[in-house]
Length: 258
Image 1 (spheres, rainbow, N blue to C red):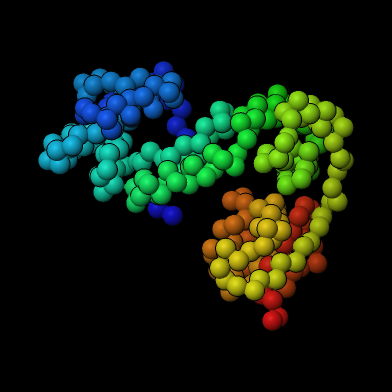
Image 2 (cartoon, rainbow, N blue to C red; image 1 turned 30 degrees about the vertical axis):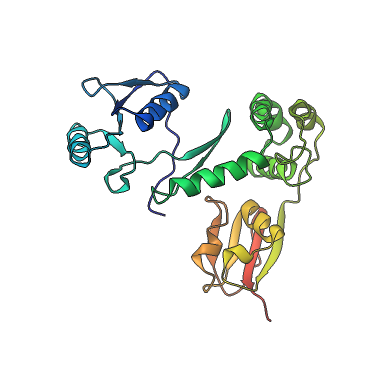
């Protein structure tokens, strides 16, 4: 990964857009949709988009803008880009961004279209309902680890708040009051890999990795497999799991004997 995916709050801020034609107009519309204001080169801004067709003119514009300390996106010129604009699945306030680092806008578009068909329109309302229930959720599950596991179970496939299912945002408040209680203080699950390819993980294995607090793994486990765990999960290389595994969900990650 050589790009850092971030969401930038641009509401009420200006973004420079240079160029004319279909590509430039599309960027101006996207900027306005995000609550920002497209402006010209002479105005104060923190980001800039160059949608100029002429190669030399576009390169010169990028150089000028960078000299001012701006981060620049150059349409259809990934080598000149400080940032790229992803394909977006919009279920406000849920945004899913699909980027290819400028390698293929067509691929990003195809993935977006597939995800559009998978994600229900109610996803944004579900997010809003979870936000509104934050205090009730904290009151029911005061400990952070316990709270995270309760939310993970509710949002899991088949759970009462499954975002890919027919979850009704109206039930979030009831779940926060009546949902299942605390999980065991500690639990250990075994994942025995048959392949170094992360695409060969079963759905259950992928979910366990995504929800674990710590991963006790053999030193030969590929980084691509470990990357499927939560970013904040502890990754602990070892030959055997220690007796004291700590609270929460732990994974013993090794290779199948086959």
